[in-house]
Length: 141
Image (cartoon, rainbow, N blue to C red; front, side):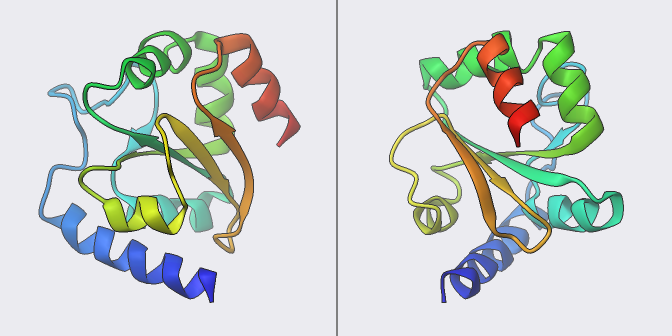
């Protein structure tokens, strides 16, 4: 039943995303050097084609630790190498997509959820972690 709810939430998100810009920065990147999107449907499609894990980064404006994650962790060369090679990174603003955040029971940001090709959650990171801990977690997934 939960999987059905996730699929419905993703469909709602897909419609909303099609009405908005897929990337948050003028240069086409959310984080410099990181292949990332804000379009969950695109992430699912890419995951199937590229056989990669989906990484949903639940984020929001005015979140100090979200900004710190993006500026210090997701910009780290080693983290980016691992993410770009093995993950489809998707930034999800909880205020724009509260239904999806609710479906994943997000109670604080940043929260990072990892999904396999069946959209089954395989791991989760709560809150901010530094680049070394983040990279260590990625290698365990």
